[in-house]
Image (cartoon, rainbow, N blue to C red; front, side, top):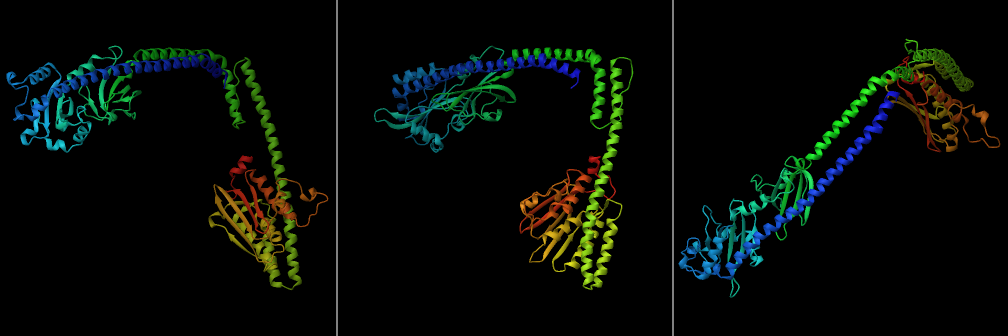
Length: 617
């Protein structure tokens, strides 16, 4: 990081960022405080609404209790003509004292909308007894009501009032947003069930309860609603959400359980605070929805001013960095850029020398240093190239005498045995092998290397006809790839001479070549005697002749020096020198299970400047 960025980072880290963190902490603390205080206020408000609603229900329970106690409903059900028991139409003088008192109570109670009775003993038109009529309302027939689950629930309550909210049973209560009380009527003398009372009260009293109670100041956007435990909105004073599913408007999975709950979530696409209070004794919950934007308006204004101040501070830091620090750090930045180009490998880069100040002296010193580095690098590169060539020649020279000795020994045996045809064939194949071996090229095609290997294997088959068989599996599309000569033959020779030593069965050498992830994989596998872990541990890259490192006082019988020395190690060292440390030979062996030698080299065409060689260069 250059000096300019360091100063700019210091300004950000020591001034801007601490101010930003402090502001964010205050902002979130304030937000959480607003939510907590509002939740407390909404809990008190919803409890007050719940208390008011419960009082309305209790007041109506008292009215119907009075009617039961004074036998008004009993007289209406047992009258000779039940259809003429409507207290709103009856003549005042025709009513007895109990009926007149109950009629006065009904008229004096402003909430009652209508009332009627289901007569258990009635038939036809006398099954429904009207007590307080209502226009344009058709009562649910008694037969249909008797088949509903609500009827069974009312019978189980045994006279305890059951309250129905709007939209819960529209077939019984109609489509208006009203509350309905339904209860069983008993004859007081014998406590016999004689009918069911249905009383509907007007909803304007509930609306006034919701509208007259506010949470916080008047600028807050608050709405209340009544929701049942299944999530249906029963009463919305604004008449917009009546009868709809409450969960469809919020992303929060809310369960309507006893007690008070408060959440900050989305409601109808707007971020809001939802407060839920379950009414005691009723399967309903009061819900208040308050817009979070109206609650956090002042905090949002503060946050905007804070962002503006932070932006101005940041802008001042940028202007200071551009107009003042650039003059000081500009020259240093130029030198640093050129040094980074040198780090990337561009040793030809030079800094323009202009002016007569200290920066010019620094640029001139940089250029002189690069000239000296280039000169030294070229010298080291040339010395390394000569060293690699010398090592390659020595390694190849180690392989050639070893192979010639074994081959000539085989020809000599055949000549003694007067096998002229076999001698001729072996000499021909040996000539082909020598033609490749003595070439001045270090690199040949895979096709030439396979031909060289096949000639060698045929020579060995002439010598050891029943000792082994071999398999070559090389795809034709890979024959044009480049490879170091004398790569496969020393590895196969190692398997034949040491892997099949002393075996009582016929050996098999398998050579397979394939491509994998841009590399050539050469696998030589035999079914010979294998190697022990101690023999495997002797194989190392780039070490001196193992004969010079033989431990004193330890018996060497049973240890194959070739496996840790000349043949395999020479091939491995050549691959490491040519392609680098990413490539080489991997040996897997177990006593009595044979040996697998896998050689990994880069895939490239003959003569190409392959990727591995580019890395080494």
